[in-house]
Image (tube, rainbow over all chains, first blue to last red; front, side, top):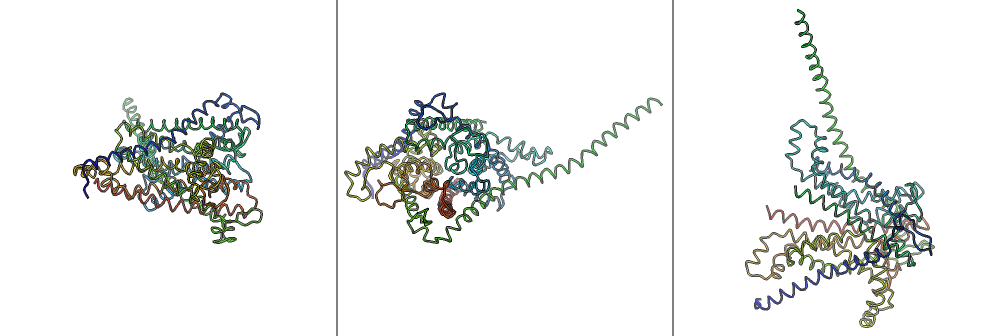
Length: 280
Length: 337
């Protein structure tokens, strides 16, 4: 069926308008969220937030210093576990890959990254919390590492694959052993891309809450022992947001602002590393 | 004589030095080379295999821990609506119902919006505008779910309670979907927050799929005199169909597994109610709320079984989505070559 040109042009206009409306409908709620975080966060953020622990119920003030500290410790722990597995695993996939085993490993990584994060929390609970008879920051780190590994693995592998084969061959032709070539030539030339992947993975686990619910559990006080329940920023945001106190809501908003700022800073840095690589 | 002797002595020394150096270096370097590469290969293989081990451990633990509940309740677990930790009777139907309804409805709302937005970004928007909006959408996909939950429970739910829900009850109250009292925290709030959360994901994957559509396809349609919308309809959408479907299904997987934001806004009441205004409960939410404080072994095991169901469902959903997205990117690569 052939319509008149004006009808077709009208329809084209209408559809363009609908697509624009869709884009606005997508951006408006997200813009609103952002607006509220900045507005509420800025009005309740103070120096105390970075230096104090949460005030007892009913008292004004207080901060989330222990949560930020706990998050930093647990992210560092998760990186200690997750980065070697992710990066060395990626070297295996890109340098010794191409076999059936490597496809199975890729599939396993995909399954892991698709698993809801609360499941990794349950697994870390049965593996660590039950045998050790107590919630601990260590269990939180393990749960976060399980989320981190597949992300680091896949991004690192992709970056290593982009290193031209001639570089490896040049190094091997100079008599450099294969393992040194992999570490000092291949991995080194892909370094900025690998860093991007690591930063994105850190940004991702920095905001994870569900895996920490029954591993790190959270803590109202300073907790510097990784074998004890540990506070974490996202956990504090969660428990303060659902509490019925106005003061705690304010702290939750301030925490959200800090968390979002850190995450955006991380992903902007990641983008910067990615860009300098492309420019070269 | 003297000179001769000295020179011969000297040359002797240097020769032996050279010889000893080569003699020392060659064999050691050879063995080191072999060993180093062998060790390196073993090491990387070990680390790569540990990913398989983690997954195997995960499946083993989840199945093992949920065995008591599976043995005690069998199929009744998914058909019973009784959840009584004191009596030790556990049925997961309300949670299954809540998860399915909230994520499917959220997906039905999110998919058309995302496709529209992705089309706008890639096909309609002037270059610079698309270049601004696309990274913005990606950045928003990275916001942690607890922050969506915070906004949902402190901003959106009160707004729903004061404005949207009374409106729906007044004007559409004759439909069972919109009957009841305005609570704020409700199934409707969960659907909205899930929609807002999956939209950036579906949009950015759909965008990638659309970018993989070969230029020649579009040019062919334009050469035939098609308007922009007709180009989209006859050339771009059919080409990216399965990839877009894959993006939507990936969004579904994300919505089913979403824990924090939903827990904060859905109201956490194990109801099976047709009304979207009443509070409900989902599978991840009940785990999040009850797992740290289980009253008995059976209670923990029942929650584990819910986790197992969740894991299997997301596994199937994600595998399906990946296959669909791969089929597009692979055929796009084939077309380019």
